[in-house]
Length: 209
Image 1 (cartoon, helix red, strand yellow):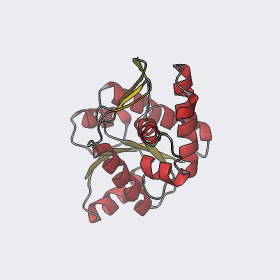
Image 2 (cartoon, one colour; image 1 turned 90 degrees about the vertical axis):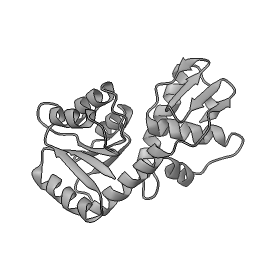
Image 3 (cartoon, one colour; image 1 turned 120 degrees about the vertical axis):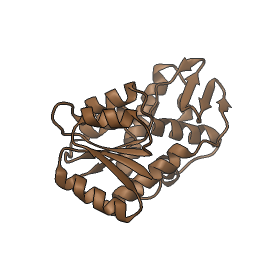
Image 4 (cartoon, one colour; image 1 turned 180 degrees about the vertical axis):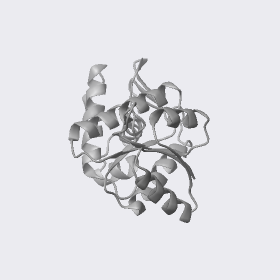
């Protein structure tokens, strides 16, 4: 696995580099969003670790530029803030997961591995349910030919819910779908709320979620 760490705190970067390299994970780092974008645009990274508070471009602006440049690698946000609004903004803007500082390096590695597994799983066929169409390979979804602007995690959750239409998925099952082991339930609540709102905006059936 190859990861890109974008963080202006050299202490955090050094700790991550040492731990990841001991676990056979290649690490490239950048101390600001501009340099990180240049590296990410070259490709070759399985995941990106992105700090929120940075000079010049903060994590949110860096995320926008990464996605605008077509960088599709899953992104895990690091944040020292306990502000729920920051978490919602990170996930709603296209981030795939978040971890609050200070964090356990073992948990960071586990979350990155889970993100990479989910991102690389492209064997599922397209799914059609009523007026809903999901292409999990291209990470796209439509309702009556209206594109649904979903994050990767929201799309995975919607795909799981649509695939199990007629049965109920537990919170633990949805957590496993979205993040793998050791995920936080607050993350699921945020994503499910956003997913319901996005579906409602195109008039999709509420019973889907």
